[in-house]
Amino acid sequence: MSIGGARTWRGLLDETTRRLRAAGFHNGEQEARWLVQRASGYEPGELFGELDQPASLRAATHLESMVDRR
Image (cartoon, rainbow, N blue to C red; front, side, top):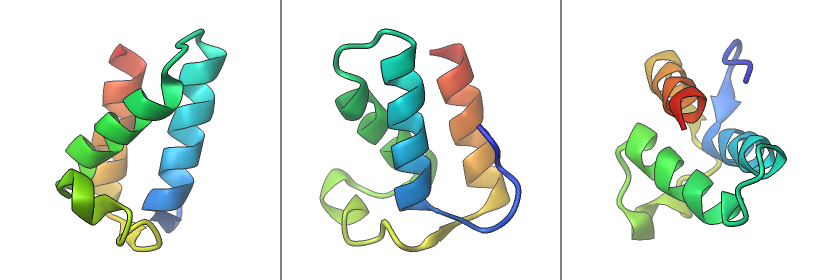
């Protein structure tokens, strides 16, 4: 997952979903949402209203680390 440049939460969610599905997770979309919510600090109901907001480098790095471990 590339964390360089300005990335939105939507882009990170899409990329995380692709990575988890490629790794064989049948519920990749759901797991991606959980990981993005955790990294972003948004509550489940808040995330979808904030998907086009830029993610900080720190939050994107945290997300990448969680996806790598998963």
